[in-house]
Amino acid sequence: MPEFVRKENTMKHIYANLLGEWVDITEDGTVEDHQDPSTYFKENLVYEPDSKVAKCFEHDYINIQYHGRNYRIHSSMIQIVSQ
Image 1 (spheres, rainbow, N blue to C red):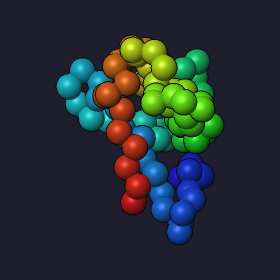
Image 2 (cartoon, rainbow, N blue to C red):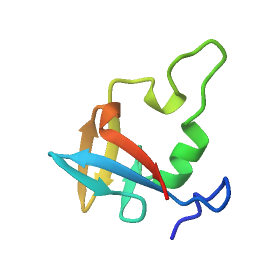
Image 3 (spheres, rainbow, N blue to C red):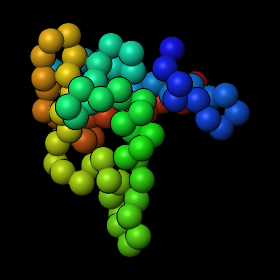
Image 4 (cartoon, helix red, strand yellow):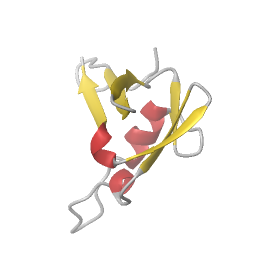
């Protein structure tokens, strides 16, 4: 499993709504130019001073690569779940 563990050994899973189906992309998908989802959100889920939007959600879309396809989805179609 990817290392997206912090806060008391909590594992985080990244889900994307791809064509109406919520898919766990943590291990089988990539984000924005084939980056590991856990690493991408760990590095880009940050807020600049005086910003209300995280760096990774500055645009109206995010690119997800999954099973040989690229999906361009709205940022609200991403869920990060701690387990």
